[in-house]
Image 1 (cartoon, one colour):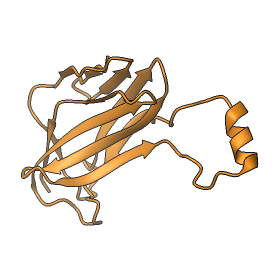
Image 2 (image 1 turned 45 degrees about the horizontal axis):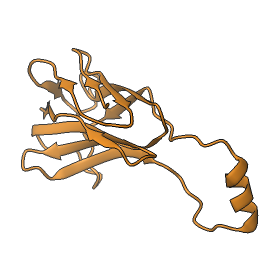
Image 3 (image 1 turned 120 degrees about the vertical axis):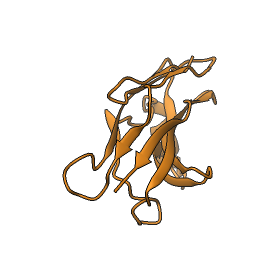
Image 4 (image 1 turned 90 degrees about the vertical axis):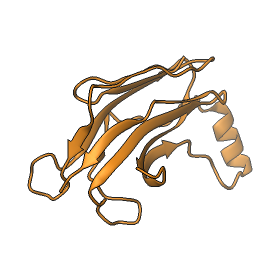
Length: 148
């Protein structure tokens, strides 16, 4: 089961298991950020907790604009050897399996994937995660308003 919770501090908690479903508890009202580097509300910080009975293969924190276009993706996915040799095959065979590193929190400073600061407006953020069994889940979209 994938369980995502969100409190006033914008906490997303993801728990993944064999059968995944999504459940989210959003805070009332949107979160505001002002990414103008004045030291006040410059970033959206989202504490993250992902738990899985297996291994977390990948996770992503995604920001969309009000049109539904993805403007920023922050994430991690399983690193696999691109060139398999006899040595790397045997090493992988006897190395304990592990998942990707999941940070304690994810921060968005208002910068989009193209390097520009997001213009004022309403944006939506959510998180996705999947495990090594192919199970995946996604949180509900939550609102962040950029107001410089």
